[in-house]
Amino acid sequence: METSARILRILLQGPGPVSGQALAAELGLSRTAVWKGVAKLIGEGVDIAASGGRGYRLIGRPGKLGPSLVAASLSSQWLGRPVHYFERTDSTNLRAKTLAVAGTPGGALVIADFQTQGRGRLKRVWRSPAGRNLLFSLLLRPRLELRSFFRLTMAAGVSLSRAVEELTGLRPELKWPNDLYLGEHKLAGILTEIAGQAQLLDWAVVGIGLNTNAAPAEEKCTCLASCCGRKIDRLALLDAFLVRFEALLDEGLPAEEIRAGWLELNQTLGRMVSVEDRGGRVSGLAVDVDADGALLVETGAGLRRVVCGDVLPA
Ligand code: BTN
Image 1 (cartoon, helix red, strand yellow):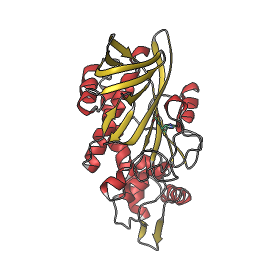
Image 2: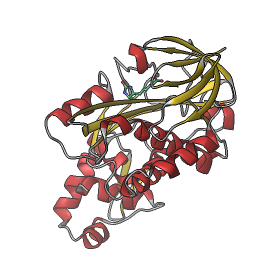
Image 3: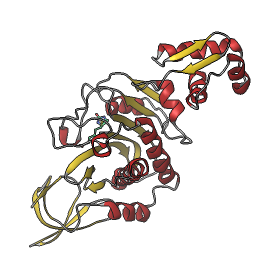
Image 4: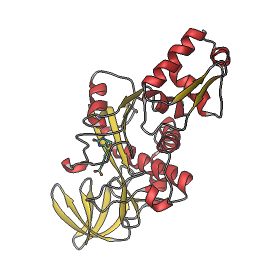
């Protein structure tokens, strides 16, 4: 972790002030290195008061994110590192894919306060106002067969729902294939993009848009803040998610455990659905998902396995 993030992690414990000398001693750095780290934080928009001889103190929590604040807020071991923060970018998925192609190791986090070309599945647009919600992508390189890549989306969905429940008490349900819903309203979407060869995954980018503090007006969406009646700490939520998702990745993405978690939270099975698949429309009763995440639909003409598409009410 960079010096600035290490300093911020101490200041975040509050209330301060913490002297430059104490910071230098705790971090094993020179006073000059501490001073440079503090200057970097101030440059990133972190509001720090330097009070004479008494030291440094945070004045409230920064509104917008920043590289040091994100890094200082994470307690995961490897997932989410390094942090690539953008105040504004085209799409965190696009950025993460560029890193993937350049050979960046798995674990990297791309996170933004605003996206100009946020994308959803099926070439849809993902809109989110600046500085309010969680918009991020993870570059992953798990040992996984290409046909099983959807397990990543399921694992991310389960981890995200549990993280939301831990922080808010709300329990978002999972709508096949990649959405989190609170009741009838969409809370989050997951966009997983992959590349591989010879049946093995080379890299995957798991992109998540979670409406923490603002719901895009034009869609049937909701946000956590409006359900809880309080502002949601985006980074606490991100950290809770990363810790859970990292555990599943460390366990080698156990198919049955992930499927069981997904089944517990799903809102798709047991409903009459109509799915727009590549091969046309499949209508019937959604009865199961298999280990690779395909939806099994009981139709008049027998059981159909659907690997992608949109679930509409039948
Ligand atoms: C969907 O609902 O179809 C998935 C939406 C995924 C949106 C997120 S926001 C962060 C990341 N960057 C993108 O461009 N898309 C994903």
